[in-house]
Image 1 (tube, rainbow, N blue to C red):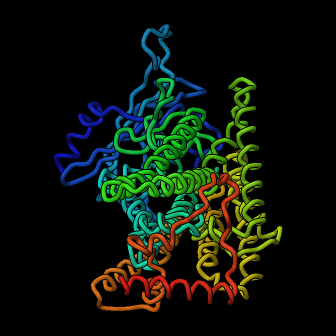
Image 2: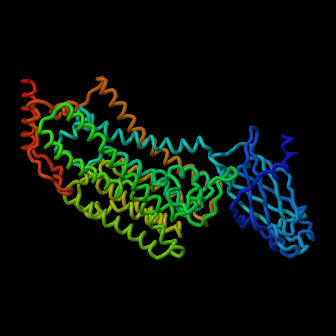
Amino acid sequence: MLSTIVLWPLLLLSVQAAFVRRWECDSSDQTVADSLFQQLSLDGALESTENTTTLSLKLIGEFMSQSCDALDGASAQMVVDTRVLGRSVGYQGRTMGTCAESLYHGHPMTGLRQYGIYRTSYFLNHTYALHTLDTTIRLQLNDSEITCVAAHITPYIGSVASVLFKAVPFIIMVLFGAATGPLRIRRTNGRSMFRYELDDASKDPAQSHVQGLGDCLQYLQFIFLSGSLTLSYPGFYQAIVSQLAWSSLIFKNWPVTHQFAYPGVMQGFYSTNSTWGLEEMSQVLGGTTMSDLWVNAIVNLTLVILGTAVVMQIPFLSEWISRSLRSRQPAELSDFRTESVTQFQRTGWSVIRTVLDRFLLPIVAYSSFQPLLASWFPVYWTFMAVSFVSILTVSLGLTVWYLAKNGRQSVFYRHSSFPSRQSGDWFASALYGVPIVRGVAIGGLQRSGLSQILVLIACEVLILAYMLWNCRYGPVWRHTCFSVARLASIAMTCAFMPHAQVSERSRGLMAYCILLVHGGVLLFGFLGPCLVDIVRFCLREMGLITSPADDFAQSNRAPVRGATRSLTRRHNTDVIGFWDRPTLATVDEKHLVYGASRASSCRSVQLFL
C-alpha cells in the first residue's frame, strides 16, 4: 500500500480523465464569503486493481482577483471526502497543484498564470459497483477554503451484473408468458394447443397464446420509464434500471445515429451531463439522442410486429403440412381456406395487441418527448410526433369500443395490466387509456419532475379506486397489489426531487427500497406463480396429480379421424371479415345440455369404431 501512495503522481499522469458532473456544495458547507477561485471543470477516473480501487480527480479553475503565482496557488490542497450511504469509504492521497498560463495549446501567452490545476487520488476499500460515490471536494489555500464542489460518481456495475439485470427479467417474462399461455391451454384442452386451435371453431382469434407475457412486459416498462423522470436519482439506480431498456424498444443504436452516441461508461464510471430524465437515461445507456431513439423505437416496433406475425405462422403451417402428408382428401382444402381466414384474424389481433397494449407506453413516451425538441428540428418533425400519438389514441378508443360492444374485453385483455371483466361502463373503458396518460406524463412533462410524479400518482389512485369499487364482481387482489407497488415506488421518488431536503444517505436508501419493491413484484407476482404452474403441469403430465379440469378436457377433445371428423366438420366456408368474428357469448343451460349430448354422441361413435 505504501508503494501505491508513493507512485500516485505517475498514475495520475498516465490516466486519461473523463468528465465528472459537478454541483455546488450545500449551503451549510459553503463557508467562502468572497470567492477567489472559479471552478471550470472536474475530471476523474476509476481504476481497479487486485488490491485497491483508485479514484483519480482533476480540478481546474481560474483565480479571479490575483494571479495563481501571486497567491501561491500551486500550494493549495484538495481535501476529498467520498461516502457511500453516509459512510466514508477510503482515504486520500497527496495533492499536486500547478499554475498554468493557458489551458489550450496555441493560446496567446500573456505571461500571467491565472489558472490552477489540481490533481489528487482517493483510495477506496471496495469497488462499490452497485453504489454511488457521494464525493465532496474542498480546495484550501493558507488554511482557508476557497472553493467547494460536490460530485456523485457511479462506478460501472460490471459486465456480469449487466447481463444478469437484462437476462433474469427476460427469463421471468418468458416463463410467465409460457405458464399463462401454452401450458394453461394444453392443461385445459388435454392435447397440443396448436392442434386444438385448428379443430376448434369457437376459439376467439382475439385471444393471445401468451396471455401473461404482456402483463410482465408492461411492469418492466414501468420500472425503466419511471427511472427516466426528471429527478435527481442516485446514479446506481439509473444504472440498474437502464438494463431494462430492451423492454421499451431500445435494443441498439441503429439504424439512425447520425454518427453520434453518448459515451456512457468512461474511465470506469458513468459520465453524464443532461437536463431531462429521458436524456440522462440515454446517456447512461450510451445511446444516441432522443430524436434518433424515437425513430429507432418505431423501427424496432415494426420488427417486433413482423417477427410476431412470422412466428405465429410456424405452428399453423407445420400442422397443415403434417396433415396434408397424412391425408389428401378434398375436404381438407375447404378446412384450410376457413382456418386460414381464422389464422389471418388471429395475426391481425396480435398486431393490434402488440401496438395498443404491450408497447403503447414507451411509444407514447418517446413521441411525447419530441415537442420539447421543437426549437432544434423542423415543424414537420413535431407534427409527426403529435400525429402519431393522436392516431394511437384514436385507434385505442375504437378498439376498446368495439371490444366492449361485442363483449370481448375478457378475451383481448386477459392477463393484462387491467382486469378483463366484461363491462359497458365508460369508466372501465377509460382505464385502458391510462398507458397513454402515463406516456404523455413521462415524455411530455420532462420539464417538471413534480408534474410527472403527480400525474403518475393520479393514475394509480384512479386504478385503485376502480379496483375497490369492482371487488364485489370478482378477485382483483393481483392487480391491486401491482398498483400499490407502483404507487409506493412513485411516492418514494419524491425524495429525489431536486429541491427536497433529503440527505444523500436517505436518497440511497430510498433507491434501494424502490428496487426491493420492484424485485418483490417480479419474484412473488410473476416468477413464483409461474413456477408453481409449471411444476403442477409437470406433475400432472407424469400422472402424479389430477385436477377437475382433466375430466373437462377429456370431454372437449377435438376429434380428428374417421366419423368424428365428419361430425365436427364445419360447413360454413364463407370468408369472414376481420371484425366480424363471432364473439364468445354466454352459454345458457339449454345450449349446455345440447353441447353435452353432442359430445356424448361423439364419444359413442368413437367407442363404436
